[in-house]
Image (cartoon, rainbow over all chains, first blue to last red; front, side, top):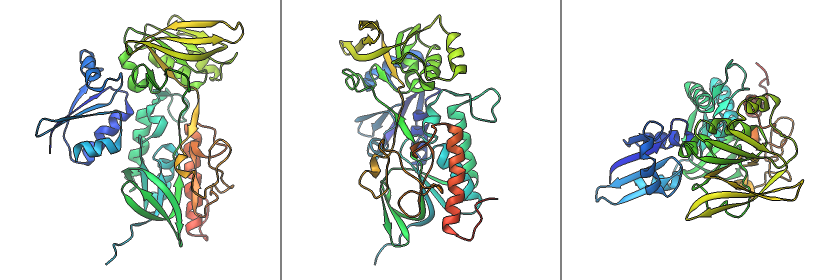
Length: 82
Length: 317
């Protein structure tokens, strides 16, 4: 089971909107970290993803294992929240 | 006991401007319409920073805002937009059977409006640094380049438009253009000239290699085809906008005829070589790759689909 989800986004990123829409369609709640508003957290997104891109979605399970999905990837998101 | 087939009047593959416009027309006629989108609702329009030439917006409109409005307008009339991928289309009696990531689905008519995607350079370093210094979406990844130097590759509308957008973040941009003239519209070139303090244009410059050190992009090697000289451009990242490729890979084993660059051939009524399967927008052979054209083609395709489903129906309103 999913304990919590954090999505790193920017204001203009259409793929970020899609990740939020997808999680919303699955009735999942999430915390959003907008890197335009909080640029100091860019390094955190980079550390998780190894990439200079958004969206980065961090999914933490009940057993505290974590999945990181870089970009808008439906099949990876689906298996990460399953 | 067999499970009941899921059958709809129309299934549209893609949910960019062409399909969303078509869906506005079909759903207003009470034609039951499902759209499948594997990427971004709004397509490339949604990832475009600013759209200046779509009619009806005096000052232009953000691509994301335009896409959102098209989606809401289509949903207002009942369009059912699903997030998933269609991998196969085949004829099944009087219906079309679509294999999707959400299971099989059947339709009386199909509209393919899968659009196109940004073309890649195919040079050393591009794959290695994909997402880590090499990018194709300025609105997504530009924010990682605050106070950094960038290279943008391309000479068309997207390259110029997105370079201007990237000046919000980058200290300087080298814009590398392969030819001796730019394909971007005159008005965009005038806009580009206003940013000459931040954007330097290099004509006749073919990008050869993206070079990194310690996992980071540090320079781009390019050849000036007039002088034959290899020039090194120091940079923190590269954004590539060198044209489009049609999203038709899923059709390569189908009976739908494609042209020599992989775009879908259609008849004058926008029907493909497969009965009852139509195509519109950037994926259609002969498309002009404009959002305004895509929405117009979507509307036309919707009327042709209506005519296909009811041969006695008029093609006009």
